Image 1 (cartoon, rainbow, N blue to C red):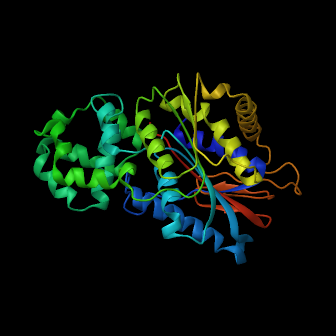
Image 2 (cartoon, one colour):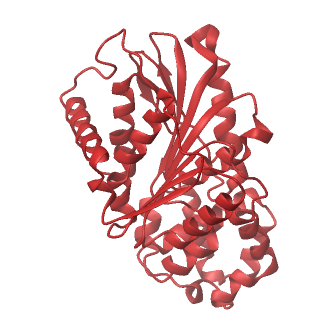
Image 3 (cartoon, helix red, strand yellow):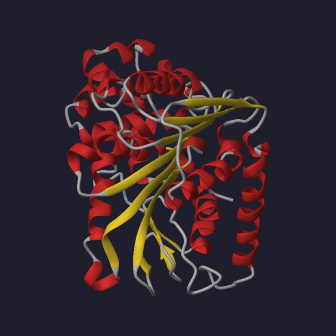
Length: 357
């Protein structure tokens, strides 16, 4: 099962609720991987386009919107939640859930270089260079000439190929600067710009965080620091941390509790007006979440049986979930290229799953 199939696994439960999915191309035409501002603007622009499509789709211009992202998709989710008040205040975003949260590109490098997932950092550097053009001359001047074709080759291939071909790569393999390349002023400038802890904006909407203490790709301490910072600035965050999971297992272990939180946002349930952090043996054993996890698996089985995807009753009214999605009482189909609607839509879910593997 690749990461796109896992994305479908969690998103189709939203479709069964009657939610409409909006799945933004948040990397944009430059494939600007690891660039927070680009990811946020692309996500918010995609939502603007959907709510402006009412004459065609029936989507309400004031549709309620929630965002949900994991791993690489956590970046556009959290950045969009933090910046929409400034960039797209007309959007009715009511909450965002994010797991495996990408806070600092540099800190990911600290635990992935010289390991199985070293290719993620090579992808990130290329993504930053695609957005910030003065990085490319720096790379050509400071990285070994013999590896540059292989280094830039990742621009033309998928993530799995890059990870396989660059396994156990170290900074010393790439540049005579070794690990100190991260201290170069131009590198520090752009990794700093894309560090959420340096963002001068605090989300005004409720947030739901979930991750694993033992995440082997994205350090959990980064999310801890972001939680502490934003809570001190008045944000409302519910944070569930898993003591036993890993990055790849948490996408499923935490999906049910995130899904339930999103449903509560659409139902108008009252939230505690404060931050709250819960540490558990495993997020999958959350009492309420366990039932939803079973539903997610059951919905997947129904899809494999080629049953119609959508709410069980045309008159049922339900919220939405997405990598940019909308929820409502509709029957719909969703692909990366668009959605097909059969009813008026009043809820949007932005779904942004992009797993680092």
